[in-house]
Image (cartoon, rainbow, N blue to C red; front, side, top):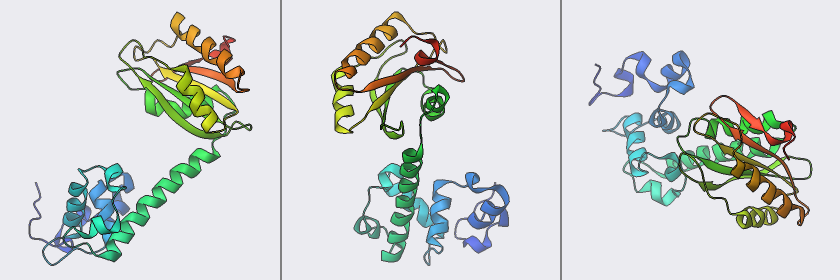
Amino acid sequence: MKTYQNLTIKQWAVEDRPREKFLTKGISSLSDAELIAILLSTGTKNLSAVDLAKNIMASADNNLHVLGKKSVTDLKKIMGIGEAKAITIIAALELGKRRKNADLERKKITNSHDIFEIFQPMLGDLPHEEFWVAYLDRANQVIDKERISLGGTSGTVIDVKIILKHAVEKLASNMALVHNHPSGNCQPSEQDRKITDKISKAAQWLDIAVLDHLIVGDTKYSSFADEGWL
């Protein structure tokens, strides 16, 4: 096992240096700290860029979401981080947020598979049930997606008032309902049918249409719209 204590990055094996590792193994092979090290470019007299990046991640509980909330002032409290490095990190995280939002804004729902592609990575492998709603504009472009409830292995409680409140706040014209079945059986239960009917009828009073309700499994799904259950 290689150890690099007290070595600069230039003294590391070539395949372990962040930039070289990126070029030879691809960007997905890099850890969060290594990606930040590339942004930092340089370390300090006593710390390599990777070690400095590890300290940054440690200050955020090794959580990029927590790191994204830090200000320039917060980051400058870390030894070796000046204003320029702090701004670089915050700018990179902001670009990531904007890319995510841009992808979401462009997504248009044209069929049940479009909904499945959005939610399967989020729900397909979960050991518990979650109920989500995709809020859509009049052109069926995604305005937002939101988790409404989180339950156990066999069910979750859905508050129809919360769903409609959020739909009104987001000025949604349409909605797509989505939840997962951890068992992998995508057939709707009687309760699934009842809550779909309840939400659909309530939404009609607000001129909002429920376009579909997907039940997501690990690699497959069932669609109320496709099966004529709506």
